[in-house]
Image 1 (cartoon, rainbow, N blue to C red):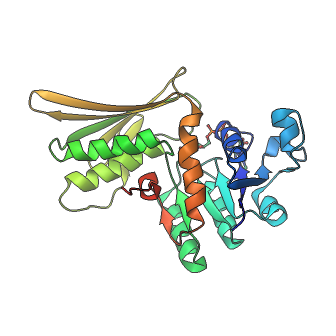
Image 2: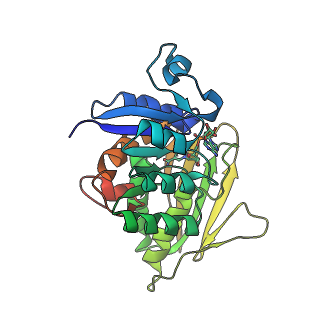
Length: 267
Ligand code: NAD
């Protein structure tokens, strides 16, 4: 098989630009398309690096799917449109790798249904960093002994969704671990708190300048607490996981939500 052809939606954004650079640096991948509304009609290389790459920035995802024919569509856009982009990709035979967070339950159900119908796979992963995956693994272990848990997440002030996708995913996993019955997870909004609760696990969301992304799981027991923190200080933290997801999604025929499932040694 030749190189995997990849397009990036949200290419002019913070994660989109980091993804473009990471994809272009990987010899198994070929960047073939970019959706960047504010750069539409311009060559992506001219804007990002001052020299042409032969990639015409598109104004919308459907135009990119039709013209550039990617095998994989990476999406780092906005919660309102991320799922629609994934559905358009699946309809055109491209596999979506969705990094956009804040997608609704019904969006995820629609992506699952489209995957089932098309026989194609998708990766919808709230956090591509290996460290966040390890945080979840360690917290799951600690939760066996300390079932009283709260989560604190801090992000930069421009983040549009709260709680973060990572915190929600963590809370759902932890709730399933500590409740003997795997009750369906739903977000309960708490008055006066930016955040919410998932099956009794409270999430506190802070939005402040100077922070990029930090998640802390706090576990309390009589006379002791444990805090497990993961800090992302640079968007490059997400790139190795993103590249793994792009390479693995082409062989999937279902939706994967957890980076751990795509790592060589599994969850
Ligand atoms: P950003 O605001 O810098 O970039 C978003 C980009 O999406 C912009 O270029 C914007 O023009 C574009 N966009 C917005 N609406 C669009 C639309 N309707 N059609 C096409 N493009 C559209 O944001 P960011 O920091 O790059 O984050 C993007 C998303 O990635 C967020 O949901 C964020 O939470 C998520 N994120 C995920 C991970 C992960 O590991 N999965 C890590 C960091 C951020």
